[in-house]
Length: 148
Image (cartoon, rainbow, N blue to C red; front, side, top):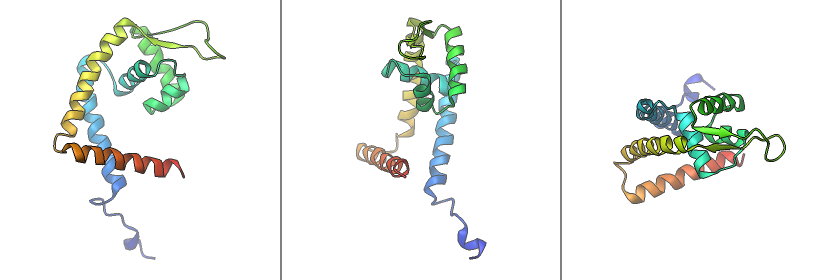
């Protein structure tokens, strides 16, 4: 088999297009969150805590797409900024519960608005049906790879 037959057409490769979309989205989110003094992983962590209270450090790390070690550092920085608080007593086992503070909820509200504006811009050229189809297709791709 020659090397030419193994080449990937980057213009039609789904994985390449998804990586490109991720890169552009991440850059837009970074730009939108920077004036708020927040990073994308910090925003993701605050959003996860607001929507799913009681998540463990490992669950937060998976949800924010960072390592457990990075999540621990991230939580320490959010705690120093008084955006989250952690109990000194574990709720179950060794897990220290993390909660949003009032300041954390306030900052999250501004960050959510900024992230929402980026998503609105991203889907502005898609009609409602296309948006639903894109969500369904991406969910199918995720499931196909998760089932492997």
